[in-house]
Length: 436
Image 1: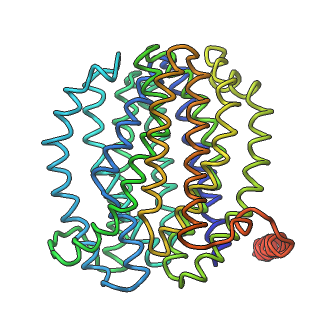
Image 2: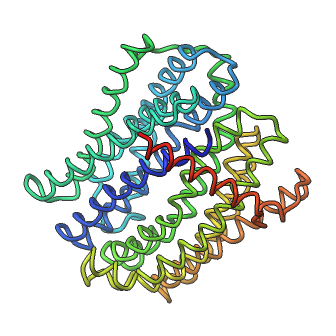
């Protein structure tokens, strides 16, 4: 079942990524490097605000549904109640703070950043819905709604940027509309099949338990997001949004290497949460071994294709992204393995490990970016992040070895049995599709 859910998630995410890549190409070709840089900064703020807004409730939903500790309706209604309170606090506190911090965002407009505070609650509500699907073991059904959101977003961006309003604001408005449409679609499905609707509940015991679990890992998500995008923010501050826009293409291509690890970490968490610790470690080790092999091969392909693919897709204005991309790829291999293993460790009940490790990344990334970006520009930013990714992964290995007493070679040394299982699963999957 893990393989089936992983393959289904992979297929859906491939299509989702292609639509997202199409959006990036439209932005680059119709709006230019400056707008692309501006939007990347806005999306950085969006990612941080959504993490602060949700505080890990989506993972808590998966965990507690998987463990069967509370029933579905109690979990869902309490999650909605928490989101309402958190959204009000975000507007009252984080929106004014963003305004006061505008000097850090350089040339980026406050009006654009303010749209983030419309998008963020919608994004979290949809992530809570997907958490319910994953917690109930309906990963593939959740994937379909996620793909619907990606398609809706891409279509709306194309319509608005090319024909209606060719501005950065159009992209964020399209994103908000896509979230709204997907949320309504899921609610209609739930009403018909589960009798579940939007509702509010404020059960102190449930919210306290979910918040306690969610925040342990969410601190890591927030610090990880800051660490992995500090380079972009510092690039924008020192060199302007056009330079940040060019560098963002290196980030976009680097994210390709995180594609499969993201899927595996997305799937491994609910599976690990439904296993004993010993069974969970066996699953984590196997997936880590296989993903590392795939990451090396993927990095090589991306590095070879980048000099052709970047100008072909984004235009010659973005050719400066190729060299930073090559440097980033080395570090992203370590980041990919870190995310998979850390997600599995969270699934077996230790979400704080993720947070501890990512604190290392923030400190290293901030220090090195401030030292290297002013002098070496995009190359310095890429080198800073690659070093930070490696040290983050190293800190995770130290914890695994000395706290959990796990043999590290089991996470790296590919086995013949692993290859046989992959081959058997692929043959079974292809045979089933052929018979259909």
